[in-house]
Image (cartoon, rainbow, N blue to C red; front, side, top):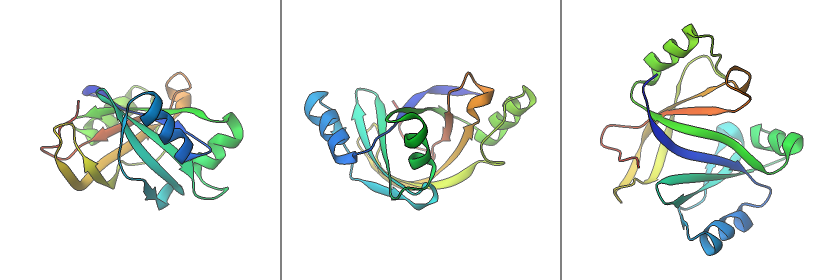
Length: 152
């Protein structure tokens, strides 16, 4: 897989507003508006700190992947995301090397926000997650950004 760079670090939190305040007021991050991802029954806020986005994630209800994570592990590191050039080809390469994925194929998710060049974006990104059991117990996310989207 052609990994370009770390682009995002996901953190599961119990209180999104409190976590966002900490990132903004204590660490000096810039926060994007809060968004909802029904697919995962969560809401999140991207906080840009230096050249990395921190995705602070809170469950909408007591179900879903973030709620399950918080019950099992408490607040903390959820995933590390990499920007990649060709997600389908890269996933096939990793599968041949024994890496399992959480879902069978990469999926599209609408990306809204500001890229690292300061431009507004509203486009689909392709995403897939490697199963933590395949890679040292860490959930790795791979993201193929749309053409022209500026990552760090």
